[in-house]
Figure (tube, rainbow over the protein chains, first blue to last red):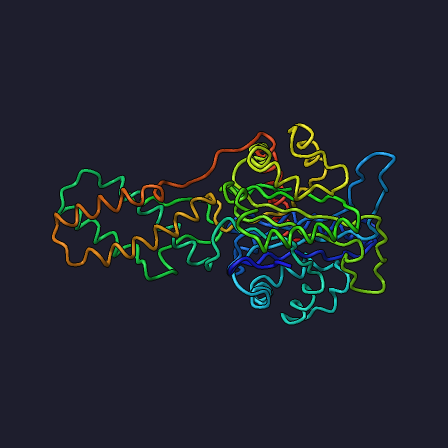
Length: 209
Length: 224
């Protein structure tokens, strides 16, 4: 009903995992969970390399929850699911293609034991595969922005830099302030979204003043 | 597990509902979307939310990709709620419950054993019981809160306009315009940075993650 909200897209997928055990040691879901937990975080995350990803997450859905009581049926899933969800800017196909092109090794590792993933050989296959796992979002709420990630990161860089500038140049006379302001604007390059800017997943600030 | 990425917390809640009430619930969500922003006005006041979504999974619509995969036979349909917000779990649940109790009841009213959003204690227990921890959670701007993202965009646009408008001013006129600009944009100013640790358990999670990553690096590859 509502995978999109403006230019932002809410992708929800459940990818079934193969039931069974690898080399009589670990079940496929446990192997997959271990691989998820060993992913690097923040700027090291594979999602930091995938263009226009605002937020993303991975987890294993082992089973559904029994709500307790004699008046409640007890459901159990017959498969475990790799749940992958993402909030990103733009259209689905280009996003998934970018995902494959920038994080193919991680994708192959994480989805290795997903049902029918052995047929995925290229970006087009991956797009088709994820679409089969996709669930339509019923209600999607965007409380943030829906501009391209580069623009968001640049705006955040400018906000931080200008806040520091305003603090550092309080009480200056008009001529000195104007000179400093012109230098500042030349340094932050408003028209260049690439640099200087924040990088995806960045966790440290580099103060200007 | 990793429910925290910088200033954001990622929540996943999966709750059952009868298959026919799931259809009603979808209709309600459809009405909410069509009448936006009236019904979502409450959500907008919760400016700590980056993105949130509700996905109703009919009991017959769990993805089945191959004949070798056993077919699910479920009594209930399920609703998956996901949110990306700033602050701690407790702050979020409190805010939700106090700001939009009737909205919460509208969204979850037909979910099995939903206790209603007030009193808070039962609602706490319900969410906690049905929550699934994330294995990996990524946030593109961990240093920023949702309000930072929104105000940064405003400031970015306004600063560009300001730069154009001051081109022909003398220095004194520039000073006045600059001071006015600061006053007009004061809500968009403020330094960002790392958030403090939200809980002792989060600190523990970070230690475990660090150990996991070290193991993966030592192995040289992410193999089991």
